[in-house]
Structure formats: C-alpha cells, structure tokens
Length: 324
Image 1 (cartoon, helix red, strand yellow):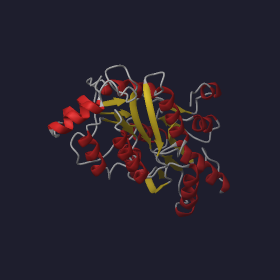
Image 2: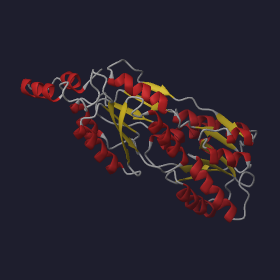
Image 3: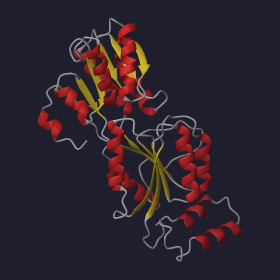
Image 4: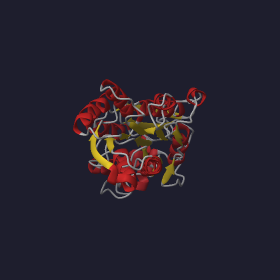
C-alpha cells in the first residue's frame, strides 16, 4: 500500500535526517497509524461542505456508509457548515493528523491556493468530491468524482427550449462561486439565456430560496418559470408562489436540479414540471477511488456520476422506490 513513508519519500524535498525520522515514525510498531503495507485501515480526512439540502444529506449518508472500518477505512468526517474557513481549518487539521488521503467537497471554487499547496507539500493525495476548485497550484488533486453540472444545466435548458420556448425565467442560483452554481448557470444560459429575466441566489437552502422568490415575485411580475439550481430552493419557491396566491407548476412552472425524494414528490404533485437528477449516492465509487489512491494505483482524473431526468410522467411508486 502507498503508505505515508513512501508518500513522503515521493515528495523528495526533505533532508536525509527527515527521511530517517519519518521512517522511524512509520515502522511496523506504529500499528494504529493506518495506510501501511501491513493491512492497516486507510486513514481518510473528509471535509463535507455542509448539510444545506436533502441532496447533501443523502451524499453524506452514502459516504459514511461506504467509508466504514469494516470496509477498511478510518474516517475523520468534518461538516464545514457551508463556510470555507471551516473547511480550510479541517484540511490543515488533516495534514497535522498525517492522514493517508484527504477528500473534500469545496464550498466555492476559489480561495484554496495556500492550503492546497500545504497539502501538496505534505505529500498527502487529494480526492475532490462533487465540486471542483479553481487554483494556481499545479496538480492539486489526484482525482475528482461528481456530476457534470454544466450538462445538468444544459439538459434543463433543452427541456425549456422544447416545452416552454416563450417562458420568462427567473433563475434561482445556488451558492455564488460554487462549481454547481457556475456550471449549471453556464449550461442553462447557453441554451435559453435570452429568456432569463432575473437571477438571485438562494444559497442552496429552502429558506433562502423562499425569500429570493418572494422578492422575485415583486420584481418580475411577468415571470412564468423558475429554474432552480437545486430541489430545496425549488421547494422554498413553491411556498412563496402559493403564499402569493399563484399555482406552482401552472402559473409559474418550476424546473429543478437534484432529484431528491421531496423534489420528485413535488413533480408527482404537479408542482414541479421537470427535474434533472444529480445523483448523490456514489459513496461506493468514492471508496474504491480512495483505496486505489492510497495504494498508489493509477486512477482516472475524472469520474462522472450518471444522472437521469424526470418529467411529470413519474409515478408515486417511482418516488417511493428512491434511495434518497
């Protein structure tokens, strides 16, 4: 296995004394360290960006269910509560703990240069999960696993283009600067951007989605559709629309991304019109990637999680059968 001592040696920029010191720290007597060639657990530091939505909760549950001790992992899981400063602290803590692999889902794309360089200097491999980073650090991560956010936006836009070509659209965006927000906006707007009459962030939460739509209903009375970057914000939008005396799905159509059970229930109830899935249940694939990385094996630079899309032909049985 690609243990910490060989990992440090691979970094190369250490003195002979330091190398010998590391070798001593990682001898077979350090039986609880993990990640060694004697079959110890792989020590993983995972920083989840938060618990802002049903999607994120399902993703967290999938990760925790897959990175178990029985499966060969020693998982240190940290919830960043949607704050980048919390994630940066967690990442530095993982370095100090000398974990074998660091995995994280970044809150936003930028602002990671310093900590990613520190991780790279430590020799600990990084696996990006769900979201991506924009950094000047060369080769900051080994691999990334997640959905194609741009394609999700494109798929949503293509449905609008075919089914509501005259719609006047308010775009309910996720956390500004996040990979999901940036890419979904780009994909959607490339298809039907000329139909978008306004935009605002709901920060991927139901409460903020409701607040944003309450304001949008006042600012854009001509609005006939909402494209929401996730289901939770769309569910908040339903509350705002109904409070305004309008019928969601009819007076104002809703096109969403996620595919969590509550979102698909809204589709069955005819309050959502179309949902593009962003599958959160890929913990087993993540576990396999982390194992390969810890073993020093070659892995693909990207692993795309397969998504589906749903319209109002979905049935209650389909929703009830969902794992999330």
